[in-house]
Length: 99
Image 1 (spheres, rainbow, N blue to C red):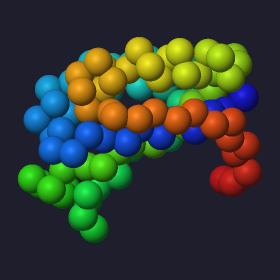
Image 2 (tube, rainbow, N blue to C red; image 1 turned 90 degrees about the vertical axis):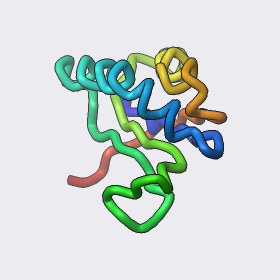
Image 3 (cartoon, one colour; image 1 turned 30 degrees about the vertical axis):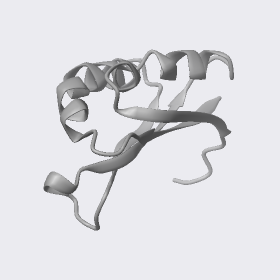
Image 4 (cartoon, rainbow, N blue to C red; image 1 turned 120 degrees about the vertical axis):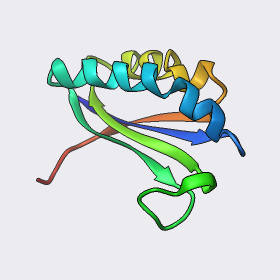
């Protein structure tokens, strides 16, 4: 089953996000290699692909996990949690309809 993982950033956490990004992306690439990643990306703080110093307000990851228990366990181990980027993480079951 797929799960939507939404991380909401702490205010002014851009420096922390940039520092933790390589380890965060490495975990996402592992999901991709395993064929379990549907999509992942950040929410820019402003209406721009590259928000610059405005930074980001959070992220969305849609990935396949074996259970509702496994998805939050994976999410809570994210470097963005340990690195002080995410102040809140939610996990919800997600049905892929399109494409």
